[in-house]
Image (tube, rainbow, N blue to C red; front, side, top):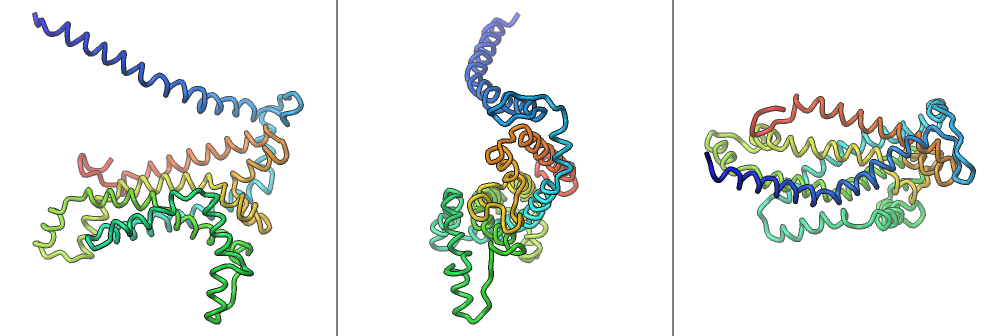
Length: 303
């Protein structure tokens, strides 16, 4: 009989006990501040409630009204357009910037800091900066266009240009995505590039057959996170355009906010929130379901 076995079992039990003790605050926080409010919002979504008067159960009427409202479909279209435009831009531009910041040149640390700073600027402050840049009367961009003899633009005040302008703003603030890419690039073994160089591979070939495959897990992560972030966009539209002009920047999250806090329709807003939750979850599952076709994992092959 192994005399050390009881001691080992006691040690395992002690570690488990302390493990449960340490994760208990996190579990309580999740139940109280995440899962609890989510379930309560699901309950509210079946009610007619304006906060002041008592709740009145109406079943699925809020959902039926949401799907029958033209404004709901308009906001979904705006959000989808912004997501389709912004995600490829952020993912591609951030990757190219990370490639440049991965070069071993002088003052590279300063360059990395400069590119990262916009991501830590509060969204409200960023919105104020870009409102000045995009202002059609005295804005920076139109000032440059006037001085070069080019026609001025309405930017965020034009129904056709507001979403592309907000997409450019999103690329400007994608410092976190750049840093994640940079960490992934620095994790690629230099020996792979040396072996490829010995075999006669050129820069384009090593980029295609070494860098891209090994970076696909990072690309996959950034695609998922950027997509979720775009679907939940709110602050930029709320501060800069208030959904205008002509609801051309009315994101779905802004529609939820309006119904909840401007019109006092908490039940309807909760129903809209759950519609957004289902859309985000479904789209995330779709992205995950396609990952086995293009994401390469260095250990264990494709998953």
